[in-house]
Length: 614
Image (cartoon, rainbow, N blue to C red):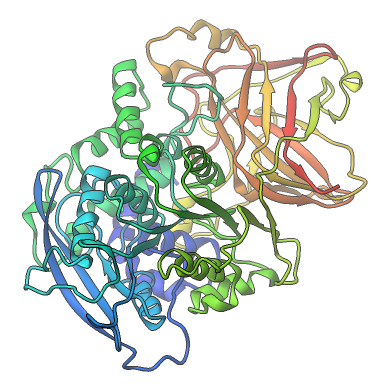
């Protein structure tokens, strides 16, 4: 399928996405891409079963806020539990939608219902530019989206009224104008929590789920350590799908809101966001434009403002997520921890790319039915809010780190927990004969090479195919366009938990000639990944995750951080490390750039793995 056809399909997705999410939720990869990319505010359709019909009241509200120099209307619903009043206040939960959703989509209004039925005041709203909220899409900018959410915190604190005069005097307060309030949401509704906490320190608890740390990394990843301002490989499928969903938002509303229109060349996003997407799509990255797009993407991302966040944060990230991989949450976790902010992290089974499969996923599926108490993640969320919003210090909020093991079928043992992230503990060497060996002395001398074509020759995923319900073919690599190194069959299971790292040195005379070009697109691009090879030869690309690299300096060795994984290599299976010339989910090399890798005992590539257990 061509890029042009994908873009046309994206417009159709933008116009039909909310209906399709509700109709197709039982499936795995495709509906989760829809639900999370277009309607996800939190991965919990939270309404618990058998609740009384009069457990709460719902009041639609409008707020006029100032954000980004514009007056914006925010469309919200207030859920007030029965019995909560000025004399019997309750803490509050604030939530908003994922990209393309609104306050009325199934996963967003579920926040209000679920927490209201558990005694919390809930305020859910459509994010700026979505649903019937006004203004442009600004990618969770703290100064715009964060400022808008802060107005709603004012309302909960009793210092600001809704447009119709409604006020709130029934939310627990820590001080005058300071409500006891937490936030929860996923994807686009996850990053806005951190953006709000950066500008409003009244927040008491956050639960950001499957969201990003750095949009520059998420949309154009360069996994070379220390790559600085060298952009990576453009993730064109995901990015253009979301871009078209965003541009179509005003068309979904019955009346045109002038505050939601920017210009003909940039209909519904802030100008900087459009320029970033247009530059990425151009395939040309001169230094001045590159600096501009990276600076904007990072300025609106948590990576640039986490030092201003001091709100206790429970991060939940998905292991099946090619949009925002586990490295994003890990970076946020480490930054918050280094700054002294209370933080814990859970790696759940599913994300934007699926993951709700197998018998062990039953507990995770309970979340979509609203049963927080019957799932591990749900119980952790409830404990986090009970501890920080109801001020119950005896509540155990769990360990610092937990991860889902899909090879264990007992739901009571699916999650492993620890107080520390696993370290790189196993070293393997890239031998000249294509073997992956555990001792440098076993490295054979040799050299092997590959070359890229003018069209992509490797496939990892088709995110847009999933969005429109088309089958996604299995991952593949064309002979002569990649190199691989493979271990012998394993004598015992090998559990990898975290982000592997590979140090490589390649020889590419054509890439070296363009090394000092003023256009970063002339630099060499390659794609690193891990396969699991079964005894019968069947290859599985682990979670369909790959590490695009635009090599900063082809004349020197470089280190690649692969996406984090949680994966068991069973006894008899083999681990295979691959570098490929291209991938059809990304923009790759400009021109033909043959690559050779030379190995010898004293000078060879190294793969380091974070291995747990024995």
